Length: 435
Ligand code: GLU
Picture 1 (cartoon, rainbow, N blue to C red):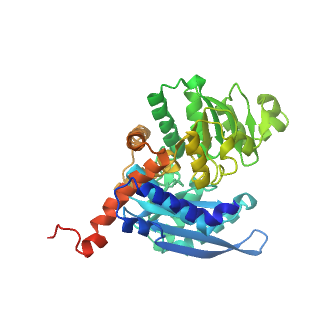
Picture 2: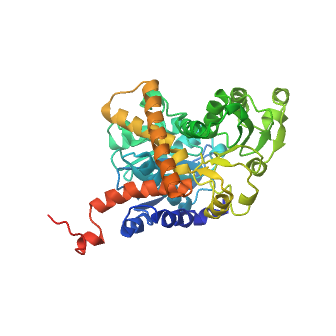
Picture 3: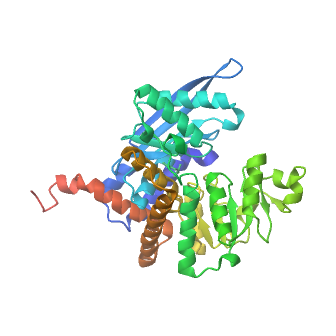
């Protein structure tokens, strides 16, 4: 996580690469290199033992050209301002790739939520919202879950925001519990979006699922669902891991029982090392690093950023990587993987399913009308397949890597919007058309 300090600078370097292939005024790109607004807050929380602890939190709005800024809030001890800025920048690009009427934002609190009691977690969450209540809003900035935050936490946030503003405001936040205005299908949307990308590749490349060996790093909300959906289609999930380590079995795992076990014991390691559960799963123990370097057909990093770096990229054997986490591959690693011919389906496309269903939730809240699960899934499928196709076609047409293609698509859409308000060419009179 030490690389987080430089994450934003590393992230925006990708803009210059895509610039050559995109139809965008360089002035518009310059604007995207700076976050629009950055808020840092101190959050005093009364702990269960009576003591006071002050936590630090951030909310960043990167760019709102295409609509209200949108993006999750993470609770993690490694949260860093530069990381939150990078994550907000990726949200801008992700929403543009998905064609959603949103800009990009992100938030984070420096905390290990596993060390807090449930009541401390609720107090922290409500106190954080109190600090950012004037910064967020249904038409300005709309948060959502991210690493180590979930539907209940979104519910507390919505409730606190509504109390502060004295208006019932479900559309201020997405990823809420369904009884509080959450959308059906939001829970597994990130995993499902990534699964739909795999299905597009399967169709284009004639894959036989039973022959495709998959390794999934990270068994949180996104990793579990993508593993479950691929397993249900016959893919062989040979390795999975969580923050404590991983397990490997060449014949493949029964994913539903791993998910049950994880929910019961809260960690994957217990699946093969704790008492009676040892007998259920017969698998070898591997580290997170070893998982990344396995001889598999499909690698799915679904944990945190900076996992595949210049140091280990040369040892990655998988020919195809689906980035379900945000930023798991660094810029240096990209170059190594591109030289090797590894196909990387980039995060701003592969994990866009979550924010796409967040958009559906926001639309439903604003309309006061909810959709069925089938409607949500069908609309998600339609958007993911279409946008995957747009990026894939551009990659082939221009003979570029898929990340550069995805950024070019994002830049084309952002560029068109930014230029509509006028750039230097217009104001200096270089544009011939005048009204
Ligand atoms: N945190 C998710 C992401 O990184 C979802 C964001 C959202 O739904 O707004 O894409």
